[in-house]
Length: 399
Ligand SMILES: Cc1cc2nc3c(=O)[nH]c(=O)nc-3n(C[C@H](O)[C@H](O)[C@H](O)COP(=O)(O)OP(=O)(O)OC[C@H]3O[C@@H](n4cnc5c(N)ncnc54)[C@H](O)[C@@H]3O)c2cc1C
Image (cartoon, rainbow, N blue to C red; front, side):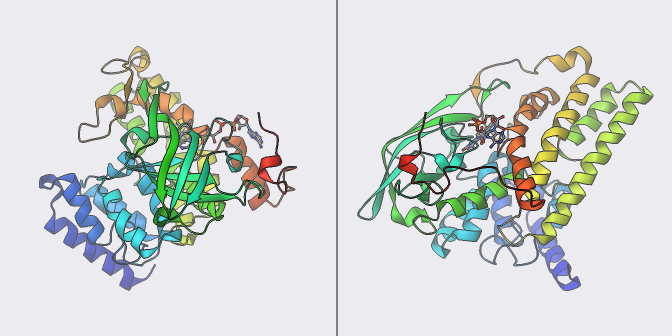
């Protein structure tokens, strides 16, 4: 970090806050101004939501905006777009694609989802079967995806599809951005332990995607998918959030209201706080090494650690609440997730956080898969046996 860049970022934040006071500016207007000021993803190019500085400045931006009471829930409402889609566009998108999609993504005018997992392809996502067949300047999509978070609210979906079944599984894939409201796309909700349908099944029946919505080369889908997954792991586990925010902030607030004064509980809260803070600082260090849009395997470290730690934090929090911790405020109703200015008490409640945290060790790659990645890519241990790696995909037996 340099003095000149720090000054430039601080001045841009000062101007943004002076021209758009958070308490009297509509969230969408604030986010639009934040994007135009280059403070959406500060490391991206100017004109595309950034100022072209080191990703290390992301923490400065989020800390100062958080302190000023700026609306920051766009990162939750459009977590897949802002946390992952943006990185994909920054690393692999054309200028036209970045111009078309980044701003409405940041302002939550267009929500994004990720169409990777299928009933027969989760951890082994490279084995996926959804087909894309070229027809002139278009691609025709057929197949089924599952566990698609926010598909019911999405305008755009990041789809990995098989374009060449004669190639081994990792080589015959291509990456597209699909219009989720288009013909041939059917979204059906799936309900979770939280009572909401946050994710969905998605069926493609002759859905059409223009070739201009292909990301990177035909056959380069695995490379782009890796960028998406690395960003996802950072979004879940290694984000540069402000100190005392998220579920540890909820734990501290709950302590003020329900803490028993018991020395054991006090010690446990302090231990959890220290672990969360150590993770946060590790994530900050990792961010300094990250190139714009492309995190490395350090995202998997954070994701693995966070999956366990967040379960501990949220369990401790509901434990402090006694019987109240066992009930859901506003009742347990089955409904599709909605994120808006009403961000309800239920969505932000300790009880909902506790239930939602159970998914952290599955979503974005399970903890077993994170350990495999760390073993192979960070520690240099021998790889798992992969007998189907060089076999044409169409010859690999499938259940
Ligand atoms: C809340 C939530 C949101 C999600 N959102 C999305 C989304 O938006 N888009 C999307 O595409 N997907 C999404 N997913 C799907 C998620 O990515 C998959 O569930 C995950 O990758 C695991 O795949 P699977 O469920 O098919 O389990 P499987 O791959 O069948 O795994 C079953 C078990 O076997 C273990 N296992 C598998 N392979 C290995 C191995 N090689 N070594 C050791 N153990 C192994 C796994 O760890 C797991 O315990 C979401 C999941 C959840 C829970």
